[in-house]
Image (cartoon, rainbow, N blue to C red; front, top):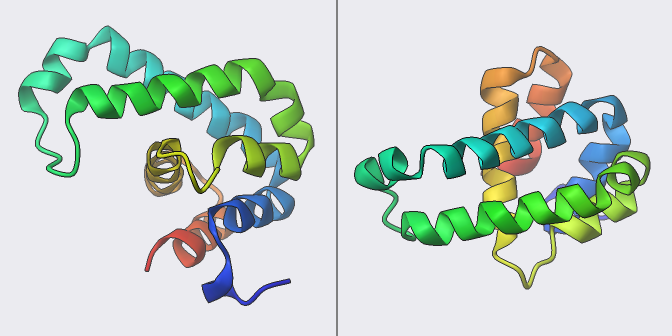
Length: 126
């Protein structure tokens, strides 16, 4: 196993899945809910969007890619840390930005598991 500072996105996601496999279905549900909300309320988000790194349309595109991957591989992602990490966290795909953001926000706002929150903070917060 690599040192924490040497883990890439795939390694972090794989470790998170292996430590908390029971959290993965709810996390995937959360990501899908956010994707649906972004599409359903597109105009509202677009009019108040202030994330300077990318436009709302770019963010929505990343969300739609993540949603498509989850829809296609959900069952396998729940069962396998390898499938979960390698499907959603390719280092050459910007979708990882959206998914990492959702993991952090899910842990901060939605999740009741304090150990999961601590693990996400350790893995994803600099």
